[in-house]
Image: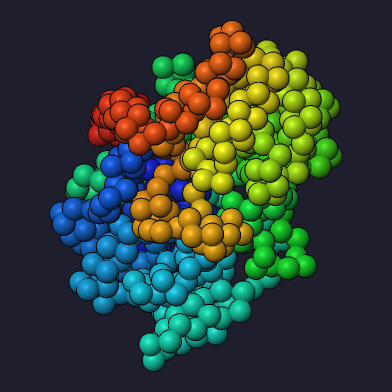
Length: 506
């Protein structure tokens, strides 16, 4: 069967979509991949109106899907509205079933079935392959595990299949570039994803730094997260699989085989990002095997994420020796009450000690990245001051990534916020909100300064509750956000020029 898989994400890595494609190909299907990278999401101008595709792009995607037997679309909550628009258009103009998958489809299948023929909940490789087979052979797909659908206007949900424990059974993600298409900045027409276009798109990734010779390849060594943070989608997902082993790692040989394949295909990729929720949570035996193989066969600098509870001196020594250059760690808050709200287990003392330990590895580590969540309506100025003070107790230099709190549907924090009346307009507050565009610009700037060489007494003064309150007043917030949007608009134009410019190289 011919199958079209569509990725609406800015990042064409689209790891899940590529894994689905390679699995479908291994089962004998033909797959066309369509990528719709667009960095305009980085602006918050879509809070009051939806970000939708143009009629020209919808028509072009529809033309590319003709002749297929199935269309699959992956989505997260922030792109629900444009995926619904695209899906409705495809169903109105083609007699081809559409299946949705991804985080939002798993969390809210009933809502998604208003716009799709089928919804795949949870991990989708086997369910999607079975769906394609039953449609191709004229059978009824009603018994496929993980699948949701409608009968007589009623949503029906088949049981979830057990989690696959042997991730090595899956083939490498699909980077063949054959029958891959993209619309740069969502501008039609769809273009064939040539090697030069792929290089340009990877260079435009916000995580790449082509001016420093860093063009990233992003992958995952595992599935699942060992923690239970109340704001995270894993908080919902792991509840779907009680009693099962939720965190599973690829075998080291399989992971290295993927990285070796990528180095051969795309020698211009110079930096690896392991985007697992907490790569440092892997057992020490696994990390030793990884370090030995990575040093011998890959040798590129790499970046990974870590929980403060998983960082040890032994792991830092091992991984920095074989190329770890950037460590991103979630601190999230310095407030004890907010830590309880988030179900974060690390205490302030543990966070500070871990920060001191990481600082000892600079260099070869670059200044680490520490994640902080802001725009939390449950926090008072005193809670925010606690966060600033905690950061000031961690040795500089470091960089702070400030993320805006989003009440992800299905999570414990979403349920509490709904009960407390904090969610008045889901479309504006959740569906159109980007976690990487904090509205409290003053606090974002202040947090960024904590990792610099600014005098600590001055930073403590700038964190005074009265200043925090004053700069967060609607008028000041509007002014600062206007200035931020000017800066972001320049960045988006730059990324757009990179994605629209194909670099044909030998």
